[in-house]
Length: 300
Ligand SMILES: NC(=O)c1ccc[n+]([C@@H]2O[C@H](COP(=O)([O-])OP(=O)(O)OC[C@H]3O[C@@H](n4cnc5c(N)ncnc54)[C@H](OP(=O)(O)O)[C@@H]3O)[C@@H](O)[C@H]2O)c1
Image 1: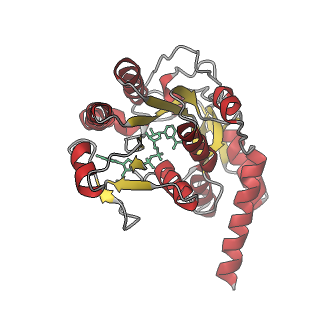
Image 2: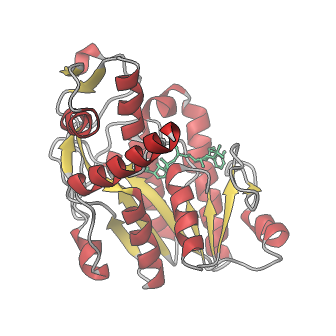
C-alpha cells in the first residue's frame, strides 16, 4: 500500500486517482481540502506519521509514502519564510525520519528550482545552485534524504500540467485571462519542460513498482517558454489572442528571484522504465477534446 501525503495537491490527486483506477492500494491525506471522503486530515508540521498509521491504517505501515504536501509557491515561501521552513523543511524532515525508522520508503517531489536557471534542460549530474528560498528548501530535503535515509526516491519536476479543461494548471491560468480579456504577461525567456501530470504519476508509480531508488528527473523534453506556450494554447483553443506579451525581469514585483531557463532532462528514468511522454501538441490536442466536450455538454 502507498500513502500520499497531500493527496489534495494537483499532482497528489492524479497519483491517487491513477492508483485507484489500476487497483493499486493507496490511501491519502489532505490538509484543508477534503476532496475525497476517504482521505484523512494530516498536518506535516504537527502530526505524527506513526499515529497516522495506527489510527488510519489499522496499525499497518505503507510500503511507501509519497510526499506532495508542500508550499510550492516561490514568492509565498519567501514572504512567509518561517512558515514555509516549518512545512517544507522541518516538518518534512520529521516525517522522513519517522518513515525511515518504520522501514517505509520515502518518495519526495523536488523541483527544477534546485538549479539556477542559467543553462536549462538540466540532467541529474548537473550541480544544483538554487537562487530562490523555495529551491534551497527543496535542496535541503534532497541532501537530507541522500545522507540519512535507507530507501528513498527523489523526483525532480519542471512544470506539470493537466490535459483536461478545468484543471488548476497553467492552461487554466491562460484560459481565465483570455475569457476575461486580460493580458497574459510572461517573464522574458522563462522556460521549462512541460510534462503531462499523468505521465509524471506513471513515472513515479512505475519507479516504485520497479523498486528503483535514488534521484530522477520525471520530465519530458518539451522545452518551451511560457510565452510560446501561451501562444500555442491561444492558437489551438481560441484561434489566437493578441494580449500575450513578454516583459523584462525588472518589470515584475517578485518577492524572490526567478530561475529563467528551467527544464529537466528525463532520459535516465525514461530509459529505465521504457516510458514515453506526451508532446506539447498531444497534450493540447487532448485538452481541446476535453474543452469541446465541456462546451457541447453546456449547450445541450
Ligand atoms: N506542480 C508542479 O508543476 C511542480 C513542479 C515542481 C515540483 N512540484 C512539487 O510537487 C509537489 C506537489 O505539487 P503540487 O503543485 O501538486 O502542489 P499543490 O497543488 O500546490 O498542493 C499543495 C499541497 O500541500 C498541502 N499542504 C499544505 N500545507 C500542508 C500542511 N501543513 N500539511 C500537509 N499538507 C499541506 C495541500 O493540502 P490542502 O490542499 O488540503 O490544503 C496540498 O495538498 C510539491 O512538493 C511541489 O513542490 C510541483
